[in-house]
Image 1 (cartoon, rainbow, N blue to C red):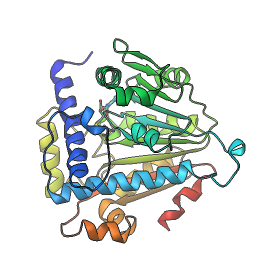
Image 2 (image 1 turned 135 degrees about the vertical axis):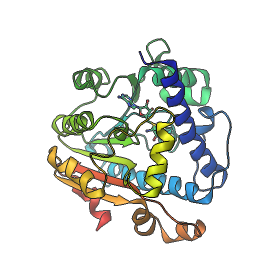
Image 3 (image 1 turned 90 degrees about the horizontal axis):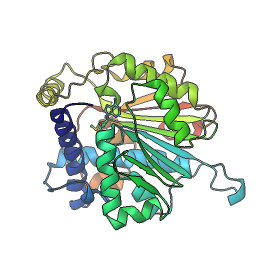
Image 4 (image 1 turned 60 degrees about the vertical axis):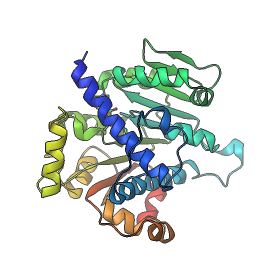
Length: 310
Ligand SMILES: C[S@@+](CC[C@H](N)C(=O)[O-])C[C@H]1O[C@@H](n2cnc3c(N)ncnc32)[C@H](O)[C@@H]1O
């Protein structure tokens, strides 16, 4: 069990993430009817933060929808089941949004430390709008930090414990042979490099057909990076992995060395200028961008998803 100060710092970081999302929602950059259940007090963020969050949100959704819709032209009974695995999901609300939009995959699994899943499970149990999205028959245990629904699972695990990861995906009913979209947003960078490497390798070995969407920091050595690291360290949350993979090339290498067939890493300026629709860009124009990176790696025959980059 980690210390209370660790837990408080982690919850503060999750709240910061949530507040950034809420600030974007309030400014009309994006819609999220669920984030307010996880964030206590809203704040107003600067346009650059709003724009960064919006770009990240839009990029993830675009790729996720490509994945989920990859065989939408087939008759329903011929479509492959699809699953999403979110590592270190925190208070992310993507599953609830997908449910509302009628776009949820057959199975959506979220993993995090027990301290976090306990809090998320309690919030899901308390709030009817969240509760109904996990299904009336879902078993919710605050004590265990678990939610077990037919299409949604929330489970506690320390991601560094690879053997437990195998147990957890079995418990979640994840089928390694089905197409799987793995999400790790601002998670692996907090782990020591050996653990991150092991997780990336485990995912490659475990899932035969998969996309790994990673979003995390690069460039620890410029002025922005130094300040960011100081801020996080002052909260006891060092970016343990950042020096092992400090650049886009290093992130791509990490995936290729761990068995992924193709890896593409872009910084957020490029994502913003090349990936976000021009109309949306004009709506949010006027501020400078920053270097947060966004790599994606794929396995097996769903390379089509990455065609969007070329
Ligand atoms: C900065 S938050 C990001 C949360 C979410 N992915 C998002 O983007 O909003 C990092 C998350 O990773 C989780 N995490 C970090 N190390 C972990 C580990 N070893 N095992 C499980 N979860 C971990 C934290 O508890 C936290 O929820």
